[in-house]
Image 1 (cartoon, one colour):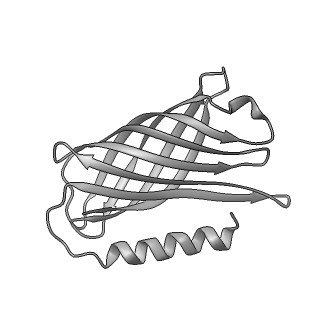
Image 2: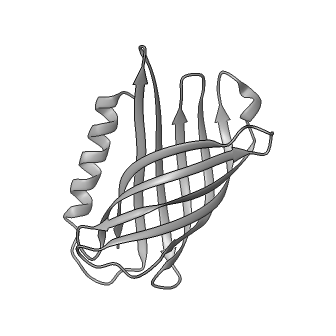
Length: 162
């Protein structure tokens, strides 16, 4: 995914989310990712997730992640949880943590991760633009069941409760 396409997806998605009306909601749609380029090569990650809040601060989350780095590309589907340390309202900065497990569906180049189990731990902060829309910054730690090293990824995105 090129930098222009990535930015376009993020801007359009944020615009749609910002236009949603404000009312108490118990589901969350989130989109986050990153993009970097070096010496004519690039790497990107795009993660889309939907969560169901079982308490005002804890959500069960399913996700679809596509990742392309300098060597390979992969798609992972996963399930996990997200915990916000307190209820957020417009103007609040709320820390959160999460964890998940996923199945790598496809991989190219070094096919060693094809079919691998992916483990994730993450944490970050959410800034509430409204009671239901946030801009998020997240640090993600990823590892696989095939003795791969832990990978750290910093991503930015937004979430919308509905």
